[in-house]
Length: 88
Image 1 (spheres, helix red, strand yellow):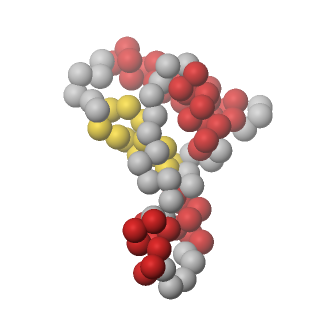
Image 2 (cartoon, one colour):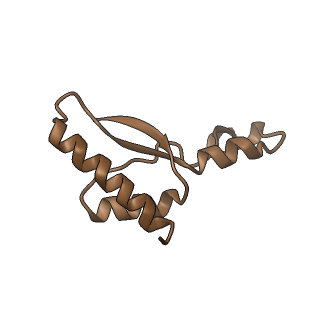
Image 3 (spheres, helix red, strand yellow):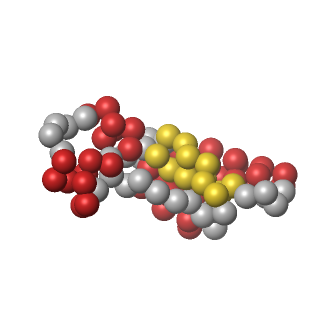
């Protein structure tokens, strides 16, 4: 597996919905680099744009044997999850 990073609003909700539907996701960077425990001592300022973007990164499944039918399922489930997470 590799990751295919995307930006989505309501990342945690979308992630939970996708996982309930059997679509694996990944959050490789849950916090900006400067907030990682081993780097906090170097933090000198807040970077709100970085924090906002980091909170939206969601990795989607991607691997070389992912078949077209599987891709279609993932695409449809993502669309559905985003709409559901928005409460529409």
